[in-house]
Image (cartoon, rainbow, N blue to C red; front, side):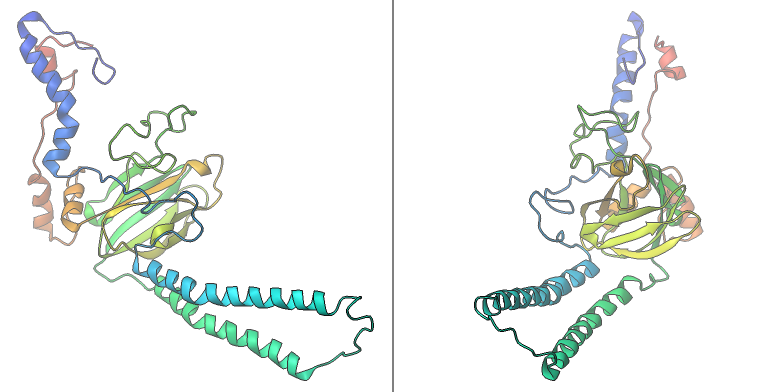
Amino acid sequence: MISGQTVRCAPRAAWACLSSIALFIAAPALAQEAAGYTPMKPTPGVGMPVDGGLTFQHQYSPLGEYALKIYNWALMPIITVICLFVLALLIWVVVRYNHRANPVASKTSHNTTIEIVWTVLPVLILVAIAFPSIDLIAKQYKPAPKEALTIKVTGNQWFWTYGYPDNGDFEVVSMMLNVPGQPEVNPGTREVGTKPWDGPSHLEVDNRLVVPAGEPIRLQITAADVIHSFAVPSLWFKLDAVPGRINEKVLFVEKPGVYYGQCSELCGAKHGFMPIALEALPRDKYDQWVLTHPGGVIDGKDAAEAAAAPAATPAVATVPVDSPLAASTGAAE
């Protein structure tokens, strides 16, 4: 039985039928090898949540590194100092001004110096935080360069669709892999762990969002039904997907790898089963991946080169059991 179909071989054509079956079984692997693309295996702890994690995930984008630096070297020290100062004040008040230590209450109702300090100091702290914060916001929404690759992301209930208008306008549908031993979430989708490149359960998908590493990418994000939110924490990327509207933001992945995220907007019953798996490849590997799709062309080429690109892709012959060749060898359903 092959792909749910039974094949019976006539004795005279046994060897021919056996060859056809072997070719049919090996076709997907041969196609990947011929195209030069095999999905990347994720690195444990990179681009994904970790057990016992207390802070942000390690960042793999320039914006993420900048934001994490602000958090670690500005916000956390300021917050820590404020919390310790307030705690010390509370302890001092409890010890110094309780009824037994201070039976006669103070009649003080006004202190100009204290009021100036507790008004001006918070203002100075907020101003100090505002400068890097506003700079980070401005950097996050800086438009993509004109020549940047454009990828369209569409949120659906409950999966993602990735369109590649600069690469021949093909689309990739991305659904969460089913988890062994648990109720089937996406009928017809394989189980996680059946391929050597699978990542964590509830985060891995059948078709990843594949992007080139080391260059700015223009992500245009929308939704087909309700509001979703496209979020990849390790890349410091989060943008709402709103029906009837296209939101745009630049994505930059510093190095090749697999990075995971999830829909971050409550979007219905299967909201928790709508992960994002983003695979960043070197540009040459990305181009090879593009050419594995029907109509895929390399972005940035002129019309003649784009038209010639698919023809240059090595073809792999496959023989389904219901083809004339299979029938001629005695195959039947």
